[in-house]
Image (cartoon, rainbow, N blue to C red; front, top):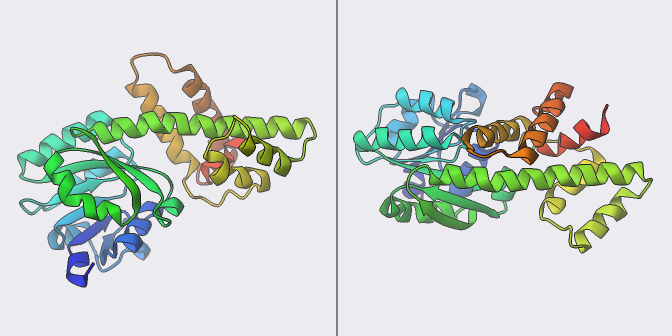
Length: 273
């Protein structure tokens, strides 16, 4: 990728995910509400004004809407929204931008910023097929696989469905390790046995050691997953009893002060009375 190509890409939101996108794509312009994180962009409109393709790496769809309402777009510009947001909001945003001659993809990411830096995330994209194909090479810089999952809003829907299972896997691992500790089992050996057993899930590889050592340096923040679980419950027309219980655990962990910690800190909600 040459420098001129990299300069056509900008990023709004320079947190963990936005910084990883910048590093992996070679983008040279990024803006964040935290001035210390900005890269060659004093304002959000500086990014929109200079870049043909803009990645949004923001905490939720409400913030996305606020940023886009204040944006000065260029005709034909492509907005790639990696945020895990409300599918209804993202569908509406896509329609609004399309009416302004701007293309919008909701391109949600399955995996953490640390995994993105290893090019080991899955990207699930909703939006126009032709626009998706135009952006495929960008996704290839940081994704092991990218899948077009349907019209605008479908990426957000698929992310919520996959995150539901992912989050419950993480909560189940936390409960299993807490149970093993109560039984006086060696936790390192327990994790090793779990990995070898039919109970195995990839979450054991990424979160098991963090739970055992209580190293909650964030790869993905607990409060962000709590936001996702609330979106799942709001979007569902059927009861989600396991997700309701998961929400209560996450809310307890947040109340204990772990909202900004890694989502593996959900184990604290089980270990602490």
